[in-house]
Image (cartoon, rainbow, N blue to C red; front, side, top):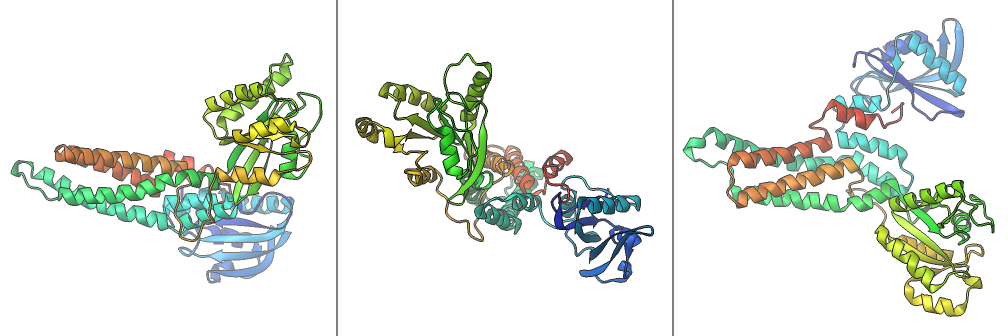
Length: 452
């Protein structure tokens, strides 16, 4: 596989001032030289840039700059070149076509980073952080990915794993002397190590809820009955006319969504069809989609029209909200037109009162939303779990170590203890890629963009 030289556009698709085309593989420099008119790239030192023409036979495609990276001093630890050309999609297509003609092949999604991992450039957790860094939409997400890419998380995991391997080796050695009743691994020391590992893994496990919010944002459904002001609130939060607003009940028939950043967190606000029984087939589909989105939300903003709502309505709708077991905020809309007596009675019911159309108390609503997600700025060196795969591996590691402790407390034989330790080592090794399968790698790197 690594004998092939791969090529892909490394910058975004579309028209731009410049585009960068990346090649990697044993023949990357030689293939580039075949189509480059300028200095002989094969004779140039690594980490140099050269100006010239990119040609297909006698036809000049573009004036380009070619950067040279010689193995092992490149991202993939292979020979690599990066061709900076003008950002016309036609030019990019022509350059890639001529490179393919001279022996390169199109890269698969994530193949550059996969080669870097397989060549030992970094471990699997760091490789996944590369993708997270590319897709980071907030500064907190960027810093969290950068911290993981720098390897602090991996170093700690590997150090603890090495200590556990030491004990596993001693217990395995005991099994070779089973008839002589010898003990090479001190059980009390082993317990202390397991407590130490579990303390670290528990901290990482507990960090996942926050890490997931930082990485993936918060899907927030705006729900309520027809004409409660859901679309108006979405437009007010986004500060643009995203959703159609009308006095006609049932105007919104499908979900409408957009994202804004509040307090360093990316919130995806989802406007939904009004909840009511309807004979309109299309509207009924929209209502069903609303209910499905509510079940999958991390937060629900439930709007009540204060000019139409009764206390009985509120009680009935809140019973449904409670059954979902999802955090929700009760928002009384149209406060500027509401009966003061109703507002007074609802004040003790943990309501937020707003006027979406007049933009009254919107700041207070945003503060309430943020109160559900306490996020301080992520600093250099902060370690948190943002990846579901890592979270699941850590849970399985923790459970395996629980079984080791239980076995030690009950005097279980060394072969069973060793089996549980090996299980914990397996799950820890999967995090950093010490233990991998082709299916695991294919699944991870297939989610990367082509040029990375």
